[in-house]
Length: 336
Ligand code: UFG
Image (cartoon, rainbow, N blue to C red):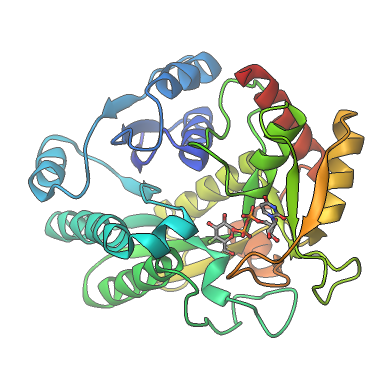
């Protein structure tokens, strides 16, 4: 059984990926510092898969702890999720973001280099494209200067990995996520935002649940059919499966170059108003919302061209937006 280290494995995307890894027959070791996750997730993963993954509470900024982990564990591949991810917070505290997101990446790669480990999957983001000039966005679209320190850590992270792949024996794949939403069908795991949600879907579900009074729709004067901004919302389980496909590509040595990157989305763009309607239809809830001004830093539209990911990863999304929204709602109801 191949052993896979999943950093940030108790987080939103990490926990769903752990489940898919276990279901595919991998042995999973999780590293998580619980800074934005709960230890209960470990138990909930176990409820789904029947096997409790190994867990280490390690802060990846502490180099000696990272070294000690690798000294005492033999692993065949790494999926690296652990990172701070709040765009607004990163503007307030850029150094925390650079220290955590870049520091932990460098320490992991150093340990991999020193042991000739070579299979690495990196959580990247479509934010590297900024507002792309052409839609849908292909992997050939140029990257643009990051809008936030958070986005910059994803760009710099990719560059660090690219350089390391050139210099050392590393093989790596960066997955550029579009907008992950939804929860596991079992309703045992889902998204657990801290405080007031910044992202659309948790705000929608908390509003429907009565935790928030009203959803603010940020801007209806964009150059889109209904004036609201367009994103590509992907079910987190579909996204998790893309990680398994990418990992298998590396383990089977099917990668074409030592560093590759793929767009992971559905290929379909939905406006904020379309999301609200789809949520209302899928869940029979009426959503209280109002249109307000644009949110600073938001782009007009982003959705993926999935041709390359579909072909190279032999992967495609299976779930609809309605299924994803419905699972988010089921998850929300369980949190009440
Ligand atoms: N939106 C609202 N009201 C809200 C929250 C969001 O109208 O209360 C709108 C946003 O303006 C945007 C859309 O819903 O048009 C989606 O917003 P999210 O915050 O859910 O997602 P973003 O596309 O802004 O952000 C996501 C990830 C970030 C990443 C970014 C890069 O959450 O991690 O994509 O494109 F950096």
